[in-house]
Image (tube, rainbow, N blue to C red; front, side, top):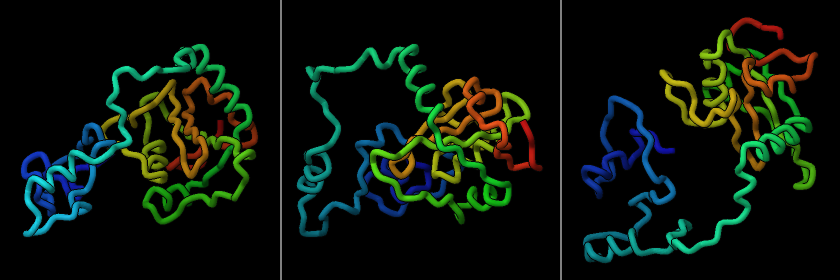
Length: 203
């Protein structure tokens, strides 16, 4: 995800201007997988413009444009199958409890939990349960998103929520941020309080 204000924010208007320009809001750049920094090109006054364009558009990319590619494992996208996968992962999660002070530091980018080293075969998912005053309360979740460098807009709920839970990967580990009103909240250990930006909560 690319926020407006990124050095190449003016590509759409002046594609080869490097310095960018001030903006009054946030936006998500489409098709981020195809975005590359113009500064990565070998381009100077002696390089023909057409060669610079060729270097930008004609190089090999990870994106596969072939239409005849066979897609396998489609059945795993069914909701019933995905639910089984989720419940299996959540039942074996390592649960983190972040106190309010750490969450505040973390949301400003000055602190992150220490991730102990583990072998590839011993990497349980990590779950963090967060407090909500209501189903529409995402104050703590926004702070958690900032902790892990996830995009969020201050006026809207974080994107990618599935039944009140946000799933992503961090340092090779599956991460689950689970709200109080999520059906997966039942996996929270009984002796652990949910993470909250406000005064310590229980439940």
